[in-house]
Length: 439
Ligand SMILES: NC(=O)c1ccc[n+]([C@@H]2O[C@H](COP(=O)([O-])OP(=O)(O)OC[C@H]3O[C@@H](n4cnc5c(N)ncnc54)[C@H](O)[C@@H]3O)[C@@H](O)[C@H]2O)c1
Ligand SMILES: O=c1ccn([C@@H]2O[C@H](COP(=O)(O)OP(=O)(O)O[C@H]3O[C@H](CO)[C@@H](O)[C@H](O)[C@H]3O)[C@@H](O)[C@H]2O)c(=O)[nH]1
Figure 1 (spheres, protein in one colour):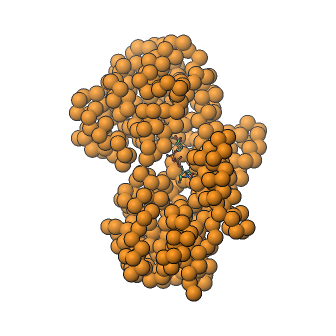
Figure 2 (figure 1 turned 90 degrees about the horizontal axis):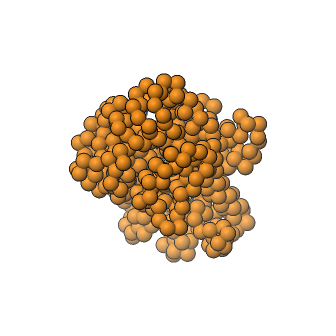
Figure 3 (figure 1 turned 120 degrees about the horizontal axis):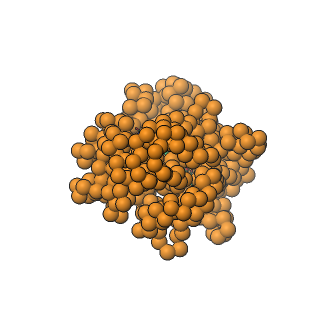
């Protein structure tokens, strides 16, 4: 099949690359000329495990191409994916300007029947808006389909190539046939393609993200209560996660959810509810709890240092919003950097992938080190923001020498309490008893 993908962010690049890998001819279109030039030269613009290999193979074998020209990109395409940003607008609702601009531009240049696919996360009713925007100037038949994407950053290739399910919103039999053929190589037995109408498909995406954000937030609230009653949230997680009705995944308490999706999508769904005269109370509570959770370690840090952080130096391990990505959008680390710098502290940070992105954002507000141990030298404490696997089994003997105080504030519960007590550390974590080795 001949496929055009408009927008080469995370979703566009993974969609284009994976569909090239299944034997299609793919052209990716982006207005960012520098990025397109890079990709034409075989340079992948994001860090995503496993993607570069597929990107290079399919580029080299001529199945994956790049252009800045929309008309060149969509020429002879049978399907056009819209993988464009839908950031929060001033009022929190998803801003559709990128999607509707491309829809406007597509109308006059379509030359034959095509299926236009909304891959972006868009509010209910967007497929109808896209349909109307294209129809204003279209001279040929076309269908607009809602096909939300459920991939997670860090495991995006795996999620895309072996999806739990594919959701397709369309009432057109012609579009259904095209979509079925397109996804046939990706859908394993038992992992279905689920057809529904456009509005339900759009709503499914928000329901999935809001449900997962709520699940995490529920555990964060359980963690906050555990701290007050002297229980251990990790035991609670194991205790409830083994109930198959609850499930083991997305029950990890921590310093809140971040990333480019959960925060904006929960906000957008709440906005949709409001616009439709529905008071979605849970979502408001989820946003409220998550807001506080992100800087949950700050009061603990203040408690330890007697409320004065001026002149203190903190080593920060992890900056990305989650491991295996360089994405820092809504990363809890950024909120902690702001709070600590505001309080007069200095930060030395290390992240295996995300340092260039943070540097571009915060400049010399903090310093960066070439490895995790370099960050510890003369630091008053260690803060853990992201659960990169290399932080899980550190050389405590090396740490003992470098850190000024044997104290760790861990936003990701990386260490067992008895292990850390044995090493002589004071250890603050989430939803667990504080290990106090100060005396
Ligand atoms: N990032 C994820 O993990 C993820 C997963 C599922 C769904 N989504 C959704 O997918 C959508 C895209 O997300 P993303 O993270 O890939 O976005 P992104 O912001 O990383 O990238 C979007 C790309 O679109 C390009 N663009 C903007 N206007 C354009 C135009 N007129 N023509 C061509 N290109 C244009 C930008 O230059 C950029 O490269 C969003 O709706 C998001 O909510 C994201
Ligand atoms: O038990 C958990 C699981 C996740 N998180 C946090 O939740 C956020 C999101 O994590 P994750 O869902 O793994 O990453 P994303 O790449 O943002 O993926 C989410 O957002 C995408 C964009 O919509 C969807 O496609 C995915 O299905 C959905 O999982 C991160 O800050 C994680 O640290 C926790 O705190 N505890």
